[in-house]
Length: 433
Ligand code: FES
Ligand SMILES: [Fe+2]
Image (cartoon, rainbow, N blue to C red; front, side):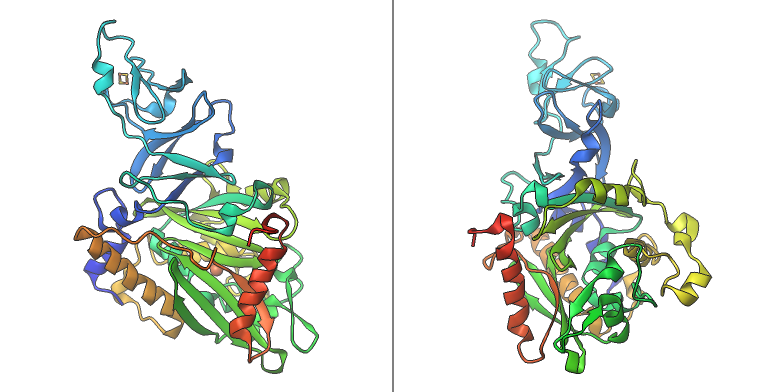
């Protein structure tokens, strides 16, 4: 439970707000490269409450500038992409990706006025199909050290999805490993519709157990957390008695990203980026330690589930997430289909656009949420008193996320050995450690 003033602090995202100032101290995904694969690579976007235009200039570089022209305020999202910049349609002022005004073609030929105009612009970087922006003060820190950013493009796939709620709600679902036993419960273990129910884990007694059965039957995980130099490492341990221990290790890369296991040879790194206080995009980078990813197939599977214009899931609050009482009785816990992203979206959105945390009652499974809020409030207060947040360090290498079974006595070392071994065996990591 939080005080109302603290809930306000950690949920406000605009440029002059408490959490907004903190979130601007970290690289934020602002788009996918595929969003600029059009005849005219420019689109209006809103990030952290700011209206911007994301574009690829005629030199092939990415720009992110204020949406409204500093001359008389028209919409630069309609601008002309030419001569190394974005040209306003109203009087032809031309801006480059750094916000410099290069031309004012209606002003007198001898005028130097253009040199005095500096438009809002944020530096961008593209990694593995994802466009990151630095929206903080000068001197951006290095990018975080993550497998999804180190792996080659062939082994990564980027996607995004709209969440109609505050960024912290989305992040807090990601650091709550207990919900998988309920929210994502399937009553049958042979779900052929996607890979989730097809996953199995080797038990210590030789048999294989479907993940769906494991989560359903062992619904009281022990949640423990470790503070790390990038955020939190979260363990969910389920005791399967003679069959061993199921360990799921997830990570919070402070303040808004998670690194979580997906399949045995794949992780997802997912950022939760505020559009504004009441809407968020999740940006996911799927990273394979095994085969190269089949991007066309992964894109096709996801495009079928989203309105790709704004990446809104087709199952959303307006259609009750496709809720079907018959399905709820027989097939899934939610009655909202087999796609776990839909379940998560319901959990994030249904408390309302900004959850009233003064009314909640947290339990032992909420340890990571409690620890993270404490850090958030501390960093916000420090920043308000002029102290910059520490630059995240990754002294032990990129965060390791894994979901595995092992025997009871050695799980504390086993998960790490397994996860490190998996990384070392990746073709792209050979010789890098
Ligand atoms: S309003 Fe943009 S150039 Fe005049
Ligand atoms: Fe979930």
